[in-house]
Image 1 (tube, helix red, strand yellow):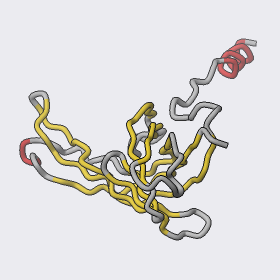
Image 2 (tube, one colour):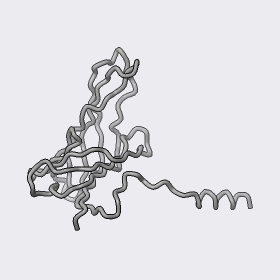
Image 3 (cartoon, one colour):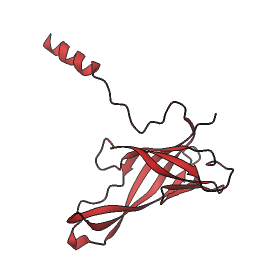
Image 4 (cartoon, one colour):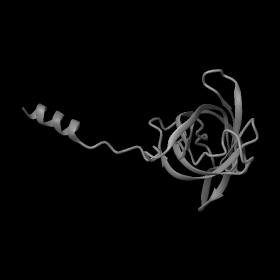
Length: 163
């Protein structure tokens, strides 16, 4: 009986919703795979040292054709091969289930490239399914100003609020 009650309590406990999920009014326009590196620098901070993200550098691939369709860079920014581009600011973050993987993100975006193209009407980008990308643990006076390029992979989903 006690086991049944414990199991019921576990199953009945509310699941915390994923804060990186976009609102119901957003619709996926496209999803790609990003392959690249997260670039970090070991910097003095608060009396100690910490790896600071300098920039991502990734190529975006269509998962069906495996063809490169764009890039991801500092900003955060995404540029498509058709010239359309967006930059954004992080709205939500969620740790990955594996501490060796960079967090999942929801990013609010605005267009910076051509008025037409794949990214022209994108309002949100979600980074999910991350693999790797976390800097090494050693960041101290010996490593000050060192730059590391840590390989990573992620899924990027591009959302619009237009149907």
